[in-house]
Length: 629
Image (cartoon, one colour):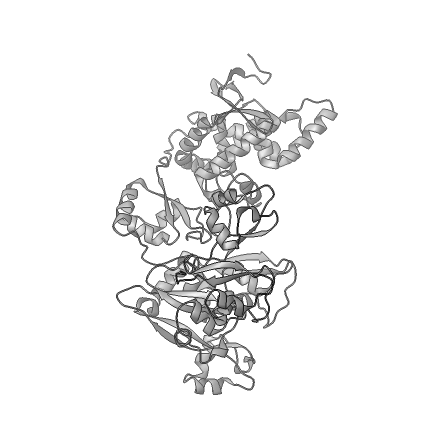
C-alpha cells in the first residue's frame, strides 16, 4: 500500500487478551495498535517517517551543525538502546520510539532542561509523579533509566489511547495533550484533516516530531552520514540490589570492592549520594562482578558498620562546627510555610531542629511566620558524613556533645566564661557571635563540650526522644526505666527544672540499632467496614484492635469513630493496654482498679492535670500481672 508521503506501509495487528487504557483496548500488556511499517529509502520503520522539508532541515542540523553532539549521543546510545527497545517490544510498542530519547536527552540520564525536565525521557516532576516515579529530596527516579523508561511507556500508551496516531502522541509528549487537542479542534473548524502537519502547534513542538524522524533516519543509516566508525558504549548489565537505608553507598562500595564514584554514577537517581531517609529500604544498581562479592560480605556480617537510620540528624548535632559542615557540604532544600505552621512542627516534619531553621533563615528569637513564606534548610549528603568521620571525636572511643545553658538576665560573656571555666573567645566561636554585645537574655548558649563515654567492646547507640509537653524528668525516668539522676547526667542538666518541651533528650543506650518510637496510628473508620477487614488491611488481629480501643465486642465499631490500628513500638502488649474513661472515673479510681499509681498514669499518658479527664478518653494503663483466683 503506497502512502501519500512517498513511502510504503504494511499493516499488521498485534494480538492478545483485552484490557483498557484511555479509550483504547489493551491486550494483556500489549495494546491493540495497528502495527504499520513505513518504508523510507529502503528501510522499514514502525513510526511514520515522511519526506518533508522540516525533516530534511533537522537531519542537516544533526549531521552538520550539531555533529559533535550527535557523535556523543551515538556513543552513549549503546548503553541504553538495547534495554529500551527490549522493553518497548515487551509492551507491544513501536521500537522506533526509542529515538525519542535521542531527541529528548541525547542519551544522557543526567540531562536537565531549562524547564527542569530531567532524565533520559525528560520528565517534568508533575508528569513523572503522575506516571509512577518517586521524586523527593533524596531520590529522583527520573534519572533511573529502567524506571523512567517504564513511566515513559505508560505515558505514550495513554497518549496513543487519546489520539490514535503516533505523530500526535509524540507531539503531546512534548507540549501536553490539552494543547494538541485544542489544535485538532481548530483544524477541524477550518475544514482540515487533523494530522500533525496541519496543526498549529508551538514552534518547539513543530520541530520536535520531525527531529525524531530525522534521528531515526540517522541512526538507521549511520554509514550514509559517516557515523559508522563510532564505537558505542557497552549495554547495561548491572543488577539491582535492595538494602536497608542503614547501609550507606560508601559501605556498599567497600563491601562490594568497587569504586565509590563508579557506584554514584550507576545510581544517579540517588542524586545526594545518600540513601533515601524517608524509606526503610532502597534499591541500587551494582556491577554484576561485584554482586556476588556483596552478597558474600552480607552473609558473613549482615549488620551495617555504622547506623544511618531515619533519625540521621542525631549524627549531626546542633554545634556550630556541624552546622558549618551542613552549610558547606549539605544540599539546600526550600519549602513554603502553610497556614497553621509553626517552627516546632516544621522542624519535626523536616527532621531538623528549630535552632537550625532560625539560623539558616535569619529568624528572630520568637518569629512570626507568614503564609507562603519561603524557608531553607540543609540536608546531609555523603560528603557531610565523610567529613564527620574525619573528626577526632568520631574516631575516639568517646563522643563530644554540646553543653548548653539558657542565658539569664544580666549575664555577660566574661561572667559565663569564668563560671564554666572557658574563655570569651571560645564562647563567641562556638556560638558564632560577632560581638560580646550580641548576647541576649533567654538565648540558648553553648558553654563547652562534654564527652559521653562509649563501651569499647560493644557499639553503644544513643536513644533520643523529643520531650513532649507537660512531661517531667520523673515521668520520663519511669517510662524509659531509668532514673532522674541518669537522665540529668546523660544530658548535662543541672536541675530538673531545666527540661523544656521540644528539647532533644537522651533517655538510654542500646546495644542494638535503635529504631525511633512510632506514634499511635489512628484512622477514622470508613462506612461499610468491619474489624476483620481492618485487621487484614493493617496486618493485625481483631483481638488486638479490640484491646487497643477498649471495645467489648466487634459490633461496637461505628462509622466515623477514631480507631487505633497500631501501637507505639516502645510498648509491648504484655506491658500496657488501652482503656476508655467511664462516667464518674477519676485517676485514683482507675489506679485502684488496675493496681497502679496515679503518678504512673500521669507519666504514661502525658497528662497536664490529674483532674482533666474526658468521658471516653483513651488511657494507657499497666496490664495486671497478678493472677486473680
